[in-house]
Amino acid sequence: MRASETDNGGPDTRRSPAAARKPLGTETTRLLIVLSILVLALFTASLATGHVSLPLIRTLAGAFGDDPGMPGLILVEIRLPRALLGIIVGGSLGLAGAALQGLLRNPLADPGVIGVSSSAGLGAVIVIYFGLAAGSDLMVPIAAMAGAAAAVALLLALAGRDAGPLTLILAGVAVNAFAGALISLALNLAPSPYAVIEAVFWLLGSLADRSFSHVRVALPLTLIGWFLLATAARPLDALTLGDDVARSLGFNLSRVRIRIVLGAACCVGAGVAVSGVIGFVGLVVPHLLRPFVGHEPGRLLIASWLGGAALLVAADLVARLLPVMHELRLGVVTALIGAPFFLHLIVRTRRTLA
Amino acid sequence: MSGLVTRDLAVSRGGRRVLDGVDFTARRGRVVGLVGPNGAGKTTLLRVLSGLMAPDRGTVRLGDIELAAIPRANRAERIAYLPADAPVHWPLRVDRLVMLGRIPHASPWRGSDDADARMTEAAMSRTEVLHLSDRVISSLSSGERARVLIARALAGDPEVLLADEPISSLDPYHQLRVMELLREFAAGDRIVVPVLHDLTLAARFCDEIVLIANGGIVRDGSPEEVLTSDIVGEVYGVETITASTNAGNLVVPWRRLDTRDEAS
Image 1 (cartoon, each protein chain N blue to C red):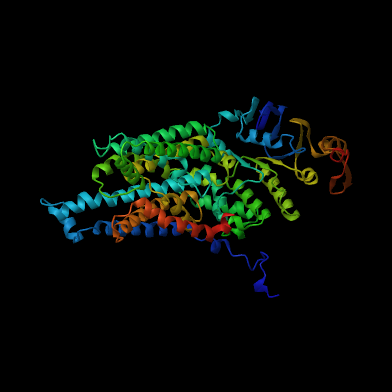
Image 2: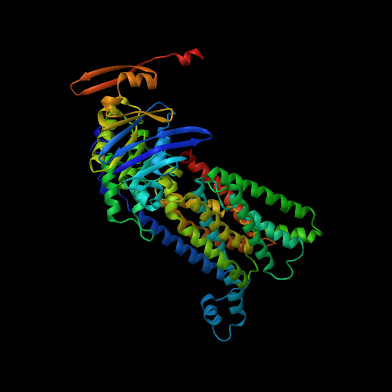
């Protein structure tokens, strides 16, 4: 037996602590820089992509001058809100997915799990059903946010003050099922086929034809949600060691739960309100990035925020660039890319999951 | 009185009295071993002592202050709780996991600093897991994992260490190492309360033994007073072999006294 093949923890196989301590912090910083550059590049590509080709820099310079002209208007009024909403909604989905997976300690959790997406969808469908959407293009977003708020109230009431992860997940399943049933009921009883088509298309999710009023309506709640979630890194790290140890490390777990459910509801509810239901981003992004941050739930938050933004802007680009008759809906694209990719991830990592 | 003291403690769970009339005292600088049969209420007592569970009746005091009156953050700095079979939900790197023990001392707007890194490293070298620093927790053996989790509890440099069965998954070498460690730790004017099932090790390393059965303290005092063959025999339902050696007294459970399992 050669000495080099023994791995009994003897002195020669032990690395010195200094050598063993890989600087995980700088690795995370590098990841965040790479993701930021990716988001910026995709954002720029999103501005440059559309039916009309625009010289980007010259148009941008002109857009804020005295006479923006048609190219300037296209850029600022059509493409900029779309790209911004991609970042806002994608960031929310990634961040909320990472926070919920950390809270529930379940890699299968995503913003859909707590029922916020489907309840926001229900709010929108009700408005479309009663024909109220024609009044203002903000009616649907506001109704969707009201739906999300109702879901959170119901969830927190169902889950109680001292709910474990399983209770929260089951309460979310119940909220999801109920919202789904009411959506089906509305579609079932819809007065005209046009209302059904409008509602179904809205549910599929899209960033097309959005304006700055959508950005304005989504932004305040989104920022509140981002703040609530991004500052929850420490309690999420502590929860790695279980509820008892997290509490013994000084955290009030009911408050942590309320903070994260509320934060996720705020930013995802506001996101769904302006974009429709977009799946898989919140599920796949934290999964994809977790190995790069050493599986630490706290470090995963900002990384997933950037990753979600990048993925959604990219998916929106794909939706616009694919040469099909009707532009694909964004929720369809994310699910088409996301589901097989997710399956691949599960197969690849099944050993560490088990 | 300096120490961790309970008076007339009572706890019910699911309509059943788990602890009743418990007067427990652990003074500074001492290792106080909690022993007793399964289901006696040892873990419940440990959880009440750590502040994780509020008693239905009675008081817990740390020093001059009632435990419930100590602010949450301060309590987290002063008391470390090490559960038995603690879960680790994500495959964290060992040094990062031990660093979680520093959370009570970290300010919310700053990452970990040099002091945190020093304390983490010191705790890891105490439980002999420094060479596992860059391993992932899920790749360790159960004994290595248990030592990493002990290091996590030590990293916070607590005044009080409450450890539920800290040595049950360790080999004899590391059982002795951890028991020595608990003594060293207590010697720095700290309170150490481990739950133990190995009566011989409990007798050797604890300054005091508190024997619990059916939710109450049967006997407390020095190991010689509590761990006699009569008391152990009656409480656990086992016959013991005792031996006086020049190194100390040995209490070894040898045979079950009744045959209640076969009878059913």
